[in-house]
Amino acid sequence: MAPAKRYTLEQVAAHNKEGDLWIVVNNDVYDLSRFADLHPGGAGVLVAPDIAGTDCTAAFFSLHRSDVLAKYAGLKIGHLDVGPADDRQPPYLVPAPGALSPAPHAEPDWLVPSFRSPYYAPSHHALQQAMRHFFDSEVRAEARAHELSGERPTQKLVELMGRPEWAIHQMRMGPGRHLHGLTLPGGVRGEDFDYFHELVVIQEMCRVGAPGYMAGLQAGMVIGLPPVLNFGDDKLKARILPDVFAGKKFISLAISEPHAGSDVQGITTTGTLSPDGKHWIVSGMKKWITNGHFSDHFMTAVRTGPRSLTMMLISRADDEGAVDTRKIKTSYSAAAGTAYVFLEKAKVPVENVMGGEGNGLKVILSNFNHERWVICCRIARYSRLMYEETWKWAHLRKSQGKRLIDHPVVRAKLAKMIYKIDMGQAWLENITYQMTHMSYAEQSTTLAGPMALLKTFLSRAGAEISSDCVQIWGGRGLTQGGMGALVEQFQRTYKVSDSGLAVPRGFGTVVLTRPDTFALQFDSILGGSEEVLADLGVRQAMKRMPQAVL
Ligand code: HEM
Image (cartoon, rainbow, N blue to C red; front, top):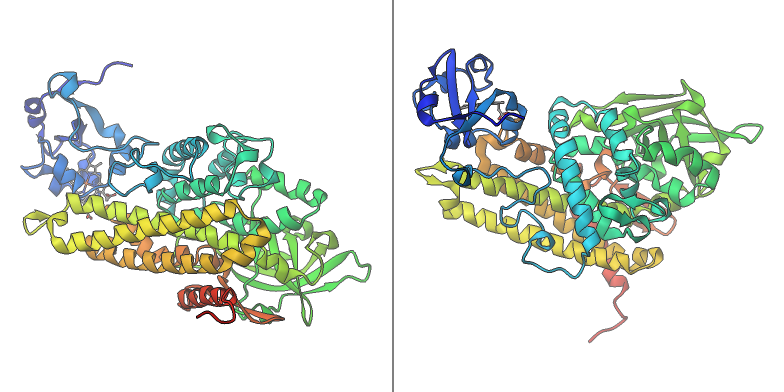
């Protein structure tokens, strides 16, 4: 490759008018002669005397994200000649794909070079590096574009994630036999994959900063597939798992309904056994089904008797025409494919029943702790990303002659963000450590309360961080795209992270009201999640209280 051309500032200055317009940004020279009329910020700003033909790096970075330079790399014609090669360090640091952020507190402590952690081994670091590189270079650009446009993730990308060398869909299902025999990114042995590895995958995904798009990227699988893994027989697993893990087929969890969003007892989707006993005939309607619009399979809660709820796998291909879906408009990105699912006498083979007839509640509840933990990993990382965005912005943006960071009121808000994100991550890692050392049954009894309180804390902290970020960003925190894009998205979508996978599917919190009945509360739509989960945490603690303590 020929060496890039080098220009002096004097040479650049000669191109300073409409039709012949060069500028310097971060030691690179751009020819904007033909782009000026297409510039989203207008041509006028570019031909202004303090911009045209000058090094306008500071002005540029106070108005654009560094992604803009990557997207418009074709406008670059060479480098600024700044003397000996050793001096050519650009004024603004744009981290390369895969790099750690140099901004303080932008990474959890275990990734800060001078910090030590008892939880993470070399294999966690190796996986983190591989995941960071993958998501920065393969996913970020598509994710941010589709978050705005509402397009679902491309099939090409979903299949790339499913390739054996990445196995990302498999890793998102957590530790287990489905990973055995695999060599995972970073050289991690499938048998060694633990909850900290899973945490790494989830948190690296979140860093891309596109919550609706990320929901479109197999979130339905994360909540819809566990019953197949935990209750499906070998034949069913062999039929369903390979294509889902390869990213060729999609699965959703289909529980919530328009009339029974918060109360599973009210589920009206009904199944009756066919006269030959070979099929369930299922009719009804589901709502808020994440990925539903493009899913091939639906893990569906079906009423099979007055007091009997049964989970069954309903596939479009099993009864073409009996399963239909329609997209629902949401406040988060349409990329999530949130949908209605209509079932019209769908014929479901009896072998597709999960965990036995009438055991639907057991199947649903079996994944609740894990699902809440996944949500905690997500909110913790999204909140940190919002802090990072705002911290960097506070250094770029000037107001009243000072940078925002030089105002005590802004620093006070950043301080609150930092202690919340670092506390949340530390608590999350402690709980994750307990998970790696407990049996599933032990986790259910011992960790349900702490997990509920952790999620309450993280979702409350996320709401407060989002609000403080918008205050600092001002109007840019309220307009889509551009500098404040991530903060704007988060204030509009953190309820999705808050209740995570629960909002789209309609349930978040299980409240055991009587031993034989239960209600599932919407997590954040009705605003009850924090209160309900906090109460669950306290009630779980009450169970552990001896009869009398003086
Ligand atoms: C390589 C050169 C440039 C490219 C490729 C570029 C591209 C863009 C793009 C894509 C946007 C839309 C918002 C976003 O995605 O961030 C934008 C907005 C804007 N640009 Fe540029 N731009 C360049 C240089 C400049 C320069 C030198 C200035 C003058 C200081 C400028 C001023 C603006 C303004 C005022 C906006 C609107 C910002 C807002 O809505 O807050 N641009 N530019």
